[in-house]
Length: 305
Image (cartoon, rainbow, N blue to C red):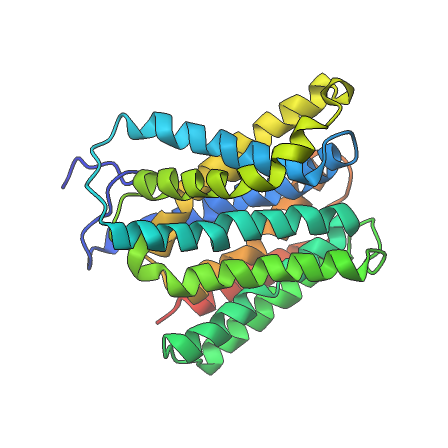
């Protein structure tokens, strides 16, 4: 397997290279998702509705995965695994993205980002109950360090937390719980197939789930009111934070534990802070530097055996 591309074929268990691929994949996916929150808020402030943006992400990414699947060899998937893939698509795509986008339309980006830091805590608790993973003091310390670092970055922004609605905050929390269930209950399924094959079928089933819900609202939507910039942001959202991130996600999920995968969620506010400084919207202070150190120290502690 020396010449296999890690983006399409899982590496053999026990190889040290697996961990490198897993951590690199999760870092890449979280960078994409970190860029997605500000993009989503920008486009939702215009004529694009949460339902349209969710549809655009799911259908657009699904088409890209189908195109990519023509260039890789795919195995035959038994019916029972198709049923499991349908359940995985509901949790990881339909409910996760739908709840998050709808919640983001009601609450503020700062509140939404704060709530996403609950993912590692929920995942570690569920892993302890359902997968019987040990909840060590080092792992708990890593989660807490990462949470502190993420909160320092978030609350140090220009926007004040707490101005969003309870409804929006609860929807964002529901999105995190759905994604945590996906990480816990479908780890075995994800390890049996290539990333492209998995995501092609998951996004296909997600599209089928969304069509009955969105057909009538889409037909009655004033499409002429959407400006070109909003269309381009939708395209960028479908390609980057959706297609590329979900292509990388199975590579991390099959090589790392659910707790390690979830702790990478703390990278998202780090990305947001870096982008804000780069764009001249914020300054890099010692507090932000300390927060970045805390986040990555937390990732290191949770990933330790």
